[in-house]
Length: 466
Image 1 (tube, rainbow, N blue to C red):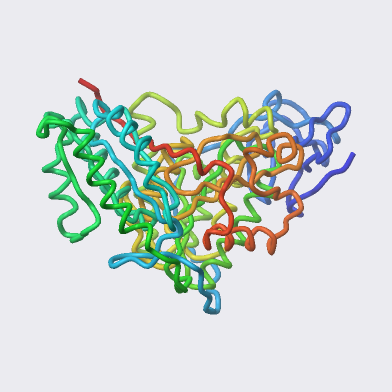
Image 2: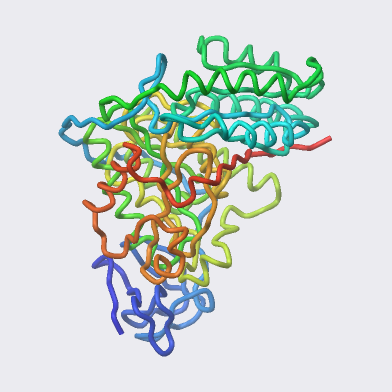
């Protein structure tokens, strides 16, 4: 049996190739673990034994439970690395305002789900305008925009506006109905301070032929966009999103630590990264808090964690309602174990800011973003905060993509081989240079991620629907 021990403090190892009684990616006891004793992986507590576990025995949900403390008190002790900066460039599309884009695309955004079909029809016919350097024309449909109240209605407006401000969008067309809660006037008011000249708007109820009206705008957009060219852009204009989904027992050993190295390299080159999935920080949140650059940022981070825990408990659910069935099948036993593997994506860099849901990235370095763990909601939130590319690690596989290129990085080679149509990079060999080279090719437009033909957005909704 091929195995690995992550930390000298651990009392469990990981089976890499699968044995007679222990599946690949699952844990086994390095010594006798008595009932009630801590189970330790990554040098941290991941749970407590619910029965005596013998040396070499399989360690999983049948004999371990979470040890998560919902009322833990947090302290701030700075423990992070600050890297010597160097310079690099990539080939991007410079924008009049904001960061450069890594794609030259036109977005059609409905303010309300009622006009989804109008947007889909416009995007379908507008494909005839894709020429020159245009990478695509996409309808970013969704089911909301009306019958939401309060914070939900505000979040939908904020997120759609943030989508429109993503650097990958050369032009944006907002299509409304005319009677929805998420009205066009509110969209325009929110975007007015940004003074963008690449966004147009119309309500279908206000024009005689919404299709003809929209096509005129899209043709005008395309005539301009097809002439845009890539130029040398400083690496400081790049922001990558960090996300994992369908994690398995290998995720915290291969894909996530490898992406962590990419995060550190990106920061050292002057770029930025955003980490989210707040519920999947529970059990490892103190380690991230210790990376906060200042006490003020630590306090913001702590508040984000505490608010998310309160959100769970107000709904009557424990904060440890995780991992998923797929996670467990892949070898992850408790939320603490999942979280400790998840946060590896942030590398060793300090955290320089904490962002609210729908807030645009401001600081150079690693920022933490308030959003849930759901794959599509979290990935949408990352892109809406300004990420031009999302690095998505997975041990189980998924075909989805948010509205920016979403690079799938597998934690294990069997998945990469089985789902070659989904997976862009196999992280099992921990090839840092290979992954960074692929990222640079993607950013430069020389590589198209396997899922780039799919563009989806989803909202973080917490309230009632009328």
